[in-house]
Image 1 (cartoon, rainbow, N blue to C red):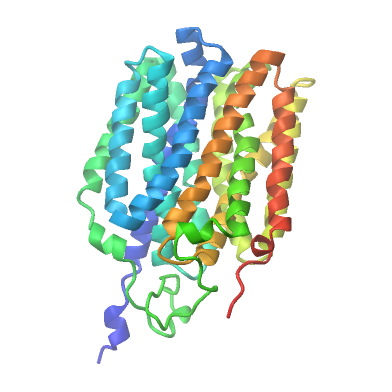
Image 2 (cartoon, rainbow, N blue to C red):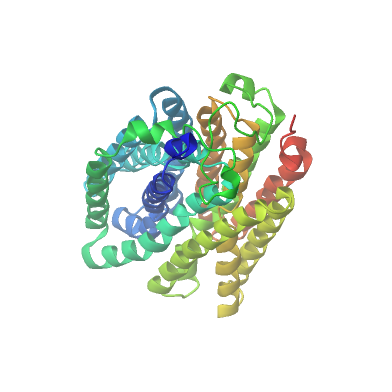
Length: 429
């Protein structure tokens, strides 16, 4: 006789499919957004823009991404994931399709900046975090870190591809190729079983922790709880210090990372590295980001998260110092140290934060709360990107931007130590 639990227990393929889909969405949307570093010099040369102008497009993109994350969370909580992915993929297909026809800075702000940023947010980490929280509970940090690494996978694959496409076809056609890819994904997405995907797992057997499907999240009232009940709405969450701690971590970390990453290709070319080598180094950072995010998630499941975060920030600081050292010696050792340290740490705080938030803010308002904290990331990335370009125009160099990045890396690190709920995690009943 087949037990009732066996009848109610889903196939392992279902959660794996949800995971793979989320990973692919982050890789394509955020990966394409990050390849703007490859388009930086071609756009500057095509339109005669200074560095502040050309980086301001990316700044608008990240602001839109930040507020789009809040919108993404609100939409997800109210209408479900299908609406998110329909709107997001539609915007991405349209914006990159029109990008090659743009001729002014303002139109780049609207199309690449606003539409591209909101589109990426609608299909990015906010719906991913919410869907994975519905399908997985055991080793959630590891699963989220693997999904979060989609950004690195996207950069690793799309940065070299964008460089090749620009050199062979021009930047206009490179954007059109990206649009065709999003159109294809949009068509496939329309045929997915969204009602089942949104529902998550209905039940799991009591002994699930000993089964291979133990990572599937039980949702019955008898399921084991991993944390105290979190706030049920965004309005409740904003009154808690941990919400603003996460907001600060997102913002400060984004300033530290994006004040450097957007300028990497142009900086390396100025230091006499070839455009191909510069793009390859940028792509290697994306590849290492995959490993760094995955390792961080695994370590965060086994060791105190504030200590893992401290090590991650330490790698970021070493990487920035090594990059700055290339101004005085273009030795490959400094480039290798930068790529290794910066690549392994860029984005590595993501799985720690998403896992902690899934525990601290568990409840029906999780997507909205997570989206609201991502406003900090969007604004921080925008400030870091624009500030680095502006400081380059004003000072004629990169050192001031590097110094600012280091300061904000320490600010982000401090939140893991000074906010009790972030340092110690949720209190169990």
